[in-house]
Image 1: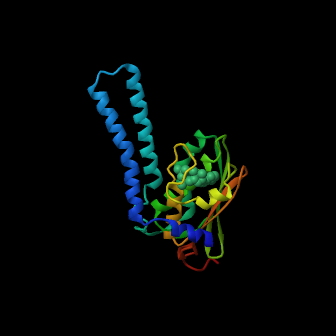
Image 2: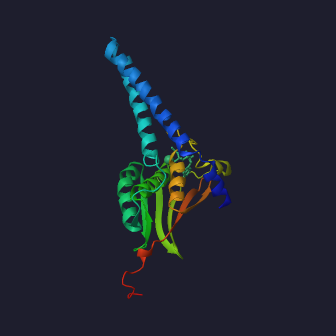
Image 3: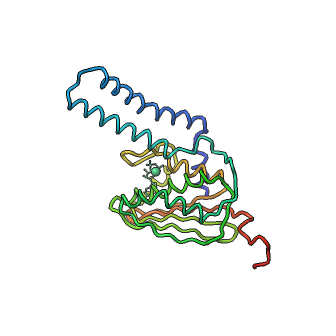
Length: 236
Ligand code: ADP
Ligand code: MG
């Protein structure tokens, strides 16, 4: 836990991160703008045209990835806080990620307990789970099995995402969650940072277990909200 806390402290202030994000998005936009101008003005040969278009599309994809990973992070405080039924939210998230899983030959296995509620903001919870699941899928370049589970222990709901992928070394684990840390060609290094930040805002905890060439398990513990108990109190 001490390690996780240090990691949270390593996060820069929101405004600093927001500044670097807009910088990161502006770079590809500037490149694309330049190439579009070239395409409009000069009489290029077909080969150059194709190259400029390809670079522009790559850069657009990069800007898109940054926005996808970062989407709801601009305001790490929770707004629109509601009692959320975790099974229902998880179901939504699985629908969102299933095309990506299929595309990567990843089969998602799900186990959940019903009637587990937390209080939080749905969009941020979605963002958080999508980022963790996306990383699990990306850790299995040859495809494989990803297990997602939702259980109750004591006063907490535990959400686990376990992949059988590349895993991480001690050194990689240490750097996980720091802004812009990525080992991927087209990575942003923002996904995990966003996850840590959202979990913190929801008064939750994260544990990461990882073994190289075996896989990784992300476990998020969230305080259960009152409404998880039967409303009339008679059904015990
Ligand atoms: P990105 O996915 O864009 O690289 P993230 O912040 O989501 O950025 O992840 C940062 C890095 O943490 C990844 O590049 C990868 O090296 C490592 N990582 C995160 N999740 C996993 C996982 N499930 N298995 C292996 N490595 C992971
Ligand atoms: Mg990621």
